[in-house]
Image (tube, rainbow, N blue to C red; front, side):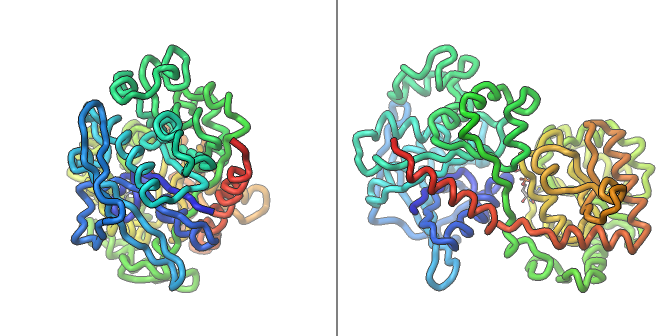
Length: 491
Ligand code: ADP
C-alpha cells in the first residue's frame, strides 16, 4: 500500500497546531504496519536545509510551475526519518521561496490560495518524476483540498495515477480556504465546476475545503463525535448540507498521540521523569514550573495549566466573562499560548494584575508545553468546539487531570469523575461540563479543586487517566482499513 501523505504542517519542522502532530504520529504508525508512506510538506522559513540536514533531490531537479500566469521554479529537498533499522519514511519538502519563505505558515496575503495550489501541483509533479503511483493521496485540511481537482483537470492524461484514490481528513471545518474565483480562471482550472451551488463554489468564493469534500473518495475527521457534529448547523461551518450529500463516506477516527514524544516516563524535556508508580516525582516538576513562572512555590494549591492557540474556538471568552469568580478560586493558573491579540492582552494583563495567581507566557514553546503537562495538577480546555484536541490526551498520560467541555474529541476522551462515581464506578478520568457558560466551567473547576484536597480520590482519577491508551497504533489500523477499501474501489 503506497500513501502520499500531503500536509501543510509536520512536527518538528512546521507546526501551528494538532495537524503537525497528526502528520508525524500517524505516518510513523502507518509505516510500522507496512504502509509505504511518503510525506509532502512545503519548505517554510522555519526549515533550514543545512541545519535540518535535508538533501537536495537531484533526481527530481527543477520543476517549472505556472501559477496565475507567472512561472515559478520549484525545487525539492528530502529527509529520511528512521523508524527502525528496516523502516523509514521519506519527507519531501517543496521549495518555492517566493511562496513559503514568509513570516508564518498561514498568511493573510492575497496569494494565500495560490501558495497551496502551487504546493498541490508540485506534489503531483514530484510523484511523476519519482515514477511513484500512490494508491491513496491522503490529503489534509483546506490547503490540500484542491489537489484532486488539479489531478483530474491537469494530469488526468497520466496513467501513473489511474488507480490513485483520495482520502481527505478534516482537522477543523472552520478553516475553509475560501478565495476569490479568479484563482480558478487564472490557473486554467475548468470553470464548469464553478457556478452558484456548484462543487467549487461557496458563497461566491472558491472553497478549497468544499473541493476536498466533494472530489475525494472518502472523508474522515478526527473524532467520532466531531464526525457527527459537523453534519449539524451548529458545528458544520456552513458545510453541513454539502457533507450530508457524502454522509456515507464520512468517517470519524480519533487522533492518536505519539507516546514516544508525550510520555512522562521518557519525556526528554522535563526535569523529573515519572510513572504511575512514582507519581510523587510529578510534584518536583510542579515546583520547577512554579519557579519558571515566579509563582509562590506552594505544593498544596492546585495548579491549572493551559496550552493553546488563543482563538475564540478554544473558549477563552468563558474565562474573560468569569474572571471575577475565577480570581477568587483557591488555585493558580499557568498559561502558554499565542493567537488573537484580544486574548493575548487579556492573559498578559492578568499576570500583571495578579502575579501570585497567574503565570503567563505569550509564545509558542514546545519545551514549556511539556513542562506544563508534567507540572500542572489540572489542565483546562473549555473549547466552544474541538475536533479532537490533543492536549487533554497528553494530560491524561501525565496524570494532569483534564477539565473540559463536552464537545468533539474532548467528549470522546474525557469521562466525568462525578458522573461515574454516581453510578458507583470509578472510571472517570477528568471533569466535564456541558453548557457553554462561565458558570458551568467554574462549577467544573470547583469540583476538581474540591477533589484535589482528597489525596486518595485524586490519585485514583490520575491513575484512571494514565492507564488510558490513545496510541496511534489503534487509529492507524483504522486508516489502513479505509485505504484498503479505497484501493479495491473501481474508478
Ligand atoms: P489545535 O490543532 O486546534 O491547535 P490540538 O489540541 O489538536 O489543537 O493541538 C494543539 C497542539 O499544538 C498540541 O500539541 C499543543 O501542545 C500545541 N500547542 C498549541 N499552542 C502551543 C504553544 N503556544 N506552545 C507550544 N505548543 C503549543
